Image (cartoon, rainbow, N blue to C red; front, side):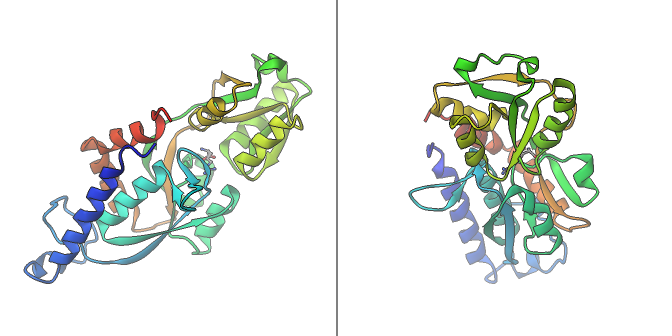
Length: 272
Ligand code: ARG
């Protein structure tokens, strides 16, 4: 899992080096008001203070709490670290329930949200989104011995989803057609627990996040659910935030330099 730590180390060293260079011989390069880095890696990065990222750390490999260090780690954290380092901000992370993330941003408690959040039309009424940085699909996860293989099999049963997620909205739609009951809970481990204890019959969740649980729980199986709505993840900002543009630029840099592929390999394809 920790194979690619050299990358983070390298970027941390790089930004320290750049900060150290600041004020010695390159005063001119940081006088511009424009927060957007031109992409010239030799340019000094101005120290712009702290940005607070909101997340819901129940969603490995996007974000979860490392049990040995108690730190929040994951794909989203690495992306946020790269972008904030590059733009000259210090990153702070606040963990909360997924359902509370947009309200926290609206009240100014957090500056942006990285939480595997899908840029839906509904959310776009209240927040701005970056470009999509990762795609995913939905699965139904259930116990193997129940032999559920289609949505029809779920009639009259209880299907768990994360409160406030696109899976909740999707399940509500499917429930009308297939006649199951939607059970909404705050945290993914809690929903898993309900399934294992037999208090719910299935979970509608993202394939990328289900993967780890399916590997850890050998008696669980899944089948794909074709989705009609939006999928994928993007960074969310308060409406009209000036961060959208510089974040998008750095996101694109991450993709074009091939570093995003490294992160995808590190977090989504790691064997252990
Ligand atoms: N992609 C889904 C959504 O935007 C689920 C994201 C859940 N994220 C989390 N950190 N629990 O609704």
